[in-house]
Image (tube, rainbow, N blue to C red; front, side, top):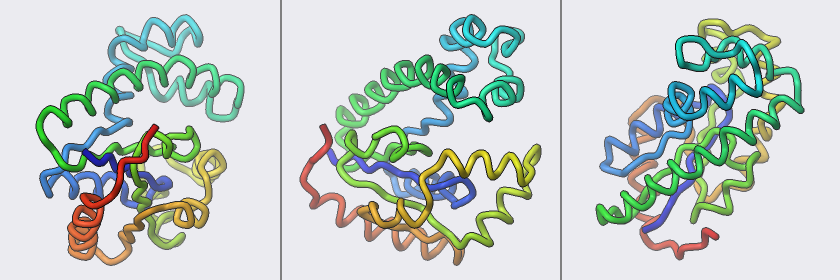
Length: 199
């Protein structure tokens, strides 16, 4: 089975691209959805211990946690130290299940793939991109988003040009869904011929 890492900066259309991979019958692991799940379960007591007052009712309060860590590199590192090991075990179970199902290709959707060295754990990387204007417009249309928060998020992410340079495949979401569907079909054909290279 070939494992594709799906990544892209905020607002590039990565979630939509992941859905279109699913629509094409590909098993997709969603790191963000898994974070949501562990924030309502096994991570909660660990995060409350590290960042008191950031949980309520047995769940992590994402707004409070974000406010606590977004401008503090040491706190962000501490949070990653709690979350990443939990994510790795969910990720491994997904791969085992996909392999058992006989899927020729599986996709792992990881926003900070390059930033966390995740490209070593996949066979090829798909980077989702769009123009900077479309990206900013999409993000600033979101609830609870402003220029300062956007700039803080972008500062933690590898620049889009660098991601595209390092990618095996690039998907441009600037022109609607049909070109993305066509591109995914092409990627799946090419991916099936790739050698495994993940470590």
